[in-house]
Image (cartoon, rainbow, N blue to C red; front, side, top):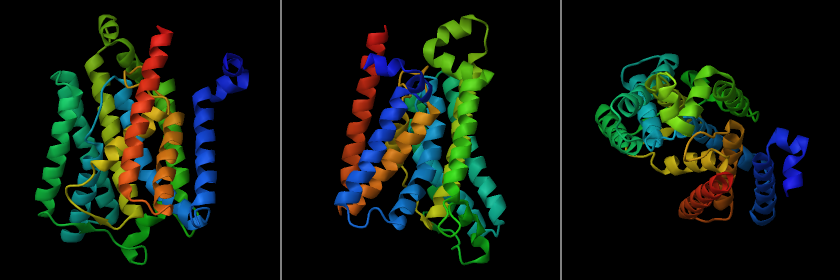
Length: 323
């Protein structure tokens, strides 16, 4: 096994990412054999629709976890962004493009709020994100008067934004998502901001003693997460029609599972955007496969929970061996 890991090609691609790709392929083959019409294009497009918004959530939370923090508010904030922007579109006649911008703005505001409390007030990330999750649900319900919000269909003049997901049967969203993933990978691995964010997760005190403004870079990680959550809301409403207040919690664990499964350490200091992307597609394929087998959503929740436990345990074991 060690010889395989030391292979130049394997080291370049990443052993963990290769394993994840194999798991993804095996899952697809298994569901294709067992599930009815799973290999058809409609199922694949449906899985991709799910992967887009979940992928942006996972990309965002990767930055936060890289600092050693956590954010359980990403799902509700995504719904809050979609509800507020959709309500502005339907009730106040705000143009579609501006409404989509409002979605990103709402996500960025929540990210700034979370980051400020964590970085400058030293409030534990768990507490901040749990509070922010409830605030997002409450703000969305108050703003929309507890009403669900429906976005324009693709057949209407205002439905042009749905082309962000697909044009005909071509998955435009797949291209956009991969482009964003590449940008996130460059930011995290090739820029000063990314190096500082990863350093915070490795040893925050050492970074502080070296004279670096750790508060600024820690807050930046949450702001990036908030912006990506706002973009996730855009892809959610582009793939689906109706958004209801009070929801979004279910996507927190799935996004974090995709992130951790991809090789991002819950202890911080180690993150893989490429692994996160593959992990997201595994979660999306799992969701679609369970539906193809006519099981309920509850089974996916169980399996996702198990995936999180196994991934975190594997990370703990790996860190023990390294130390």
